[in-house]
Image (cartoon, rainbow, N blue to C red; front, side):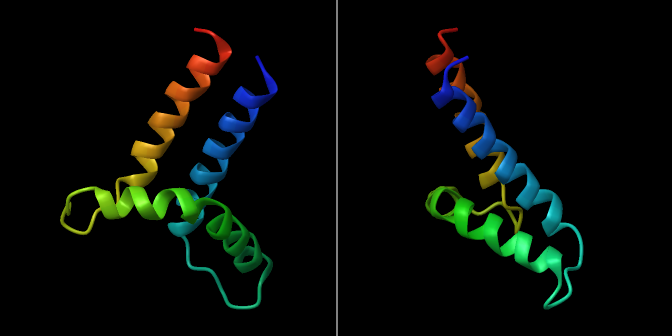
Length: 81
């Protein structure tokens, strides 16, 4: 697997981590808030535009699913199959 494919996979894991952390209450000033803020700042530049381009789904944000599927496809193409 190429280094670029590994980076793409790592980015998908960062998005997954952001999704998981969003399910839990995060107290202000804690370590989890710092982790979430880093994940947010790294993933929002990709998730935001995808979220805005998707039709409204009754309050359900499926942008992480769409992006992770796209990243899996990209990783597969980069890795050569």
